[in-house]
Length: 182
Image (cartoon, rainbow, N blue to C red):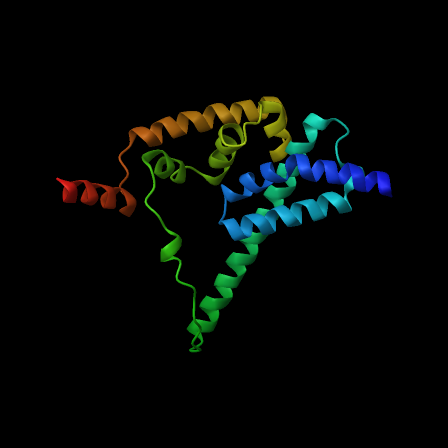
């Protein structure tokens, strides 16, 4: 048991900052810490399933974190649907104001936001998490060849989205801010 604890402590020390960054790019800081905690709890429970190769462990952890995030998003959608049902039944509920968490985005962030969730995930795994095709393929659960095709297509769609003007409110706010400075 002591040997497993030492190995897990080494895994945690080596990869906790990476898992936090992975989650923080996809959610707020508080939830990122929760995602990292849940990821390492799962890693401890499934310690015997961890890849033997050190290079394969971080993508495995990213895959676990990705699933934890997906579970959180599903729970949030269920919570929102329940709130809507309660409101429609005439009962009053208070909802959190998320306006404070919304900030102006760069054109690249807005373009990325116009892509599908699948395209965003592919691009983020390579660009933000600095994974190679093999590691990123392990995270999403496909072959490296299939991932390479997904990556190529996602990059083309991102280039197209970058070329298109942002017609959303964030784009208009940016124009209004530029005009106000003039």
